[in-house]
Length: 159
Image (cartoon, rainbow, N blue to C red; front, side):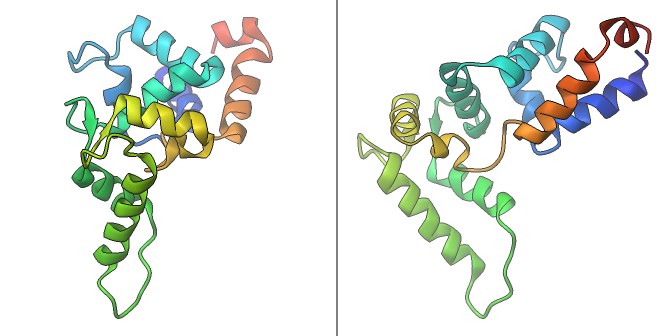
């Protein structure tokens, strides 16, 4: 398969996944090697809830310190939500959402989300998996990707 076809194919799967590279690059060497790529695709296509929780937490932990801070939540929500024209400061609404998220998900009440906080919240309500923005492929994109790749394995090898 040539680079252009592979890029088009993976764009379908990952179009809403802004932090994909950082999450796939497990050894932080600035490259996604074949093992990291295969692991990432496996998680996207057939991952368990546990694997997806870990992956999404890593995506949302923007600075890699093991916590999702108020500032990180604010940044992700600000970039995920459409801006509405209004007389109010749009950041105020986002700050309110950050507080609501922390109230719902911060079980140890330390003002930030640990992996344990995030995992417990998602297990209680799976819709919280992507609470701070999309980081997994939507089902339609996943089906399109699988249809392209798995419809004729012999054809896929020669693209």
